[in-house]
Image 1 (cartoon, protein in one colour):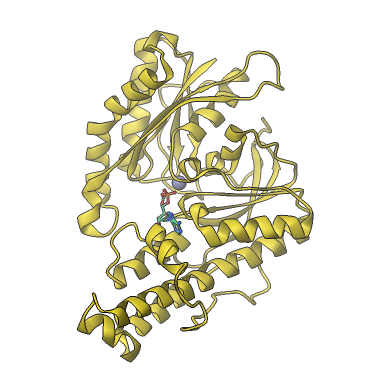
Image 2 (tube, rainbow, N blue to C red):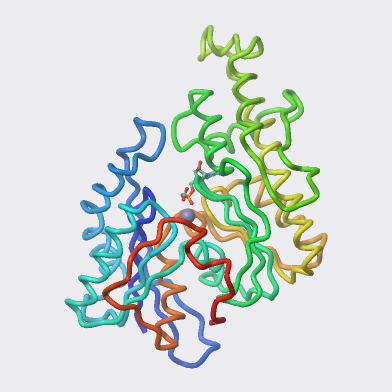
Length: 358
Ligand code: KG4
Ligand code: ZN
């Protein structure tokens, strides 16, 4: 079964082709094409502008789908089903993908299903041959999300921890902006942190000792702003190209990265021990972070369980994970109707309630 996946929930316009096995439950889904058209329009604003995002999706989506099919060496007629991100995300952006999927399904006379983007992030490692031992503990960490999940079964999840304020990726992006490092800032901070001293500027670790599984990033963000705008940041303001400014930048990056990532690793460990996790998984753009990836591997080794962190292209927003999860549903005979509507909020997405195990 050839499944075309479509993802337009935020600022990446993505299309992918996944081939689902027909030889019984053991057959592994195979990734045939994975196209992501990143939208450049947001760069100059230092963040995602929802109205611009939906317009850019309209422009980019048809080309992305054509490229994905061409990469897979397939034509429209060979698509057996369509999977599209339905929730959560920006309403206008989701609407572009859902409308396109409905129109294509109608034109090709093929079934389509709406997919939960967060569920897709959690299951992305299955595209790389992972076998998720259950129950699993996973985190979805991106510019809009910082949630810790308990995966009871494929299709049944509980949110066991969440951020009380900002998402971790948003904190990375804010601090990068303060330091003049551009947008999105996570990858730059990660790179510079490797050369910095993480103990040079101790920053607060939100909720690290709270006893529950929640996270917080607003205190860390404010402390980083006070640091950069205070006396320690004088060199940066005087001459951003000086060696002194460079030293300050890399040390702030290293200190911030430790304060942002370590509480998350701590909460993952608490959750894994509390629920007897038999595997660990991370997804979302921040799952590209080198400290998080190394820390997860170390945690898995300590607990004696596998730790899955998908390759960067499958951590960031992509349509391959959408085609993966949608394909499971289509294979079970599930179909959505033309009355399917996008659902922007995670709370309303139905993810945390007990679903039907796939
Ligand atoms: O999942 P994603 O592509 O889009 C959504 O936000 O939904 O995640 C993007 C986020 C951005 O905040 C970006 O700065 C962050 O992921 N990110 C990273 C790294 N690579 C991307 N954060 C920390 N370290 C990285 N290496
Ligand atoms: Zn995402």
